[in-house]
Image (cartoon, rainbow, N blue to C red; front, side, top):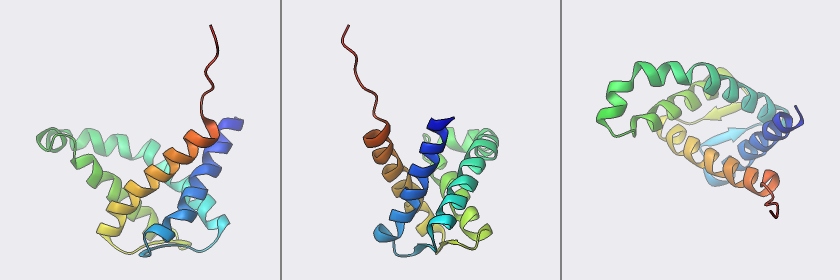
Length: 119
């Protein structure tokens, strides 16, 4: 349970850092980042798998690159549904989703990095 909360906080911090990289994306406050991170997590857990399954032929034809479009559309959707989180358009969402994933991954690796145990 504690790990889930920590990952949620890491994703919120990643959302707060995103406007420094892409000015077309804005987050109004830390509480807005927490809510947006929660909504993004729920959307990625519930809606994304259905969309990936429905668009499987296109995804196969594009060698998996269409998943980036799905991620961008979902990121853009959350930006338009929640007022404290704004995404400027499709291309902002496209690059925002990629940068958000990279920042979140890097922070998770730094904070939650698995320690190697000696055998």
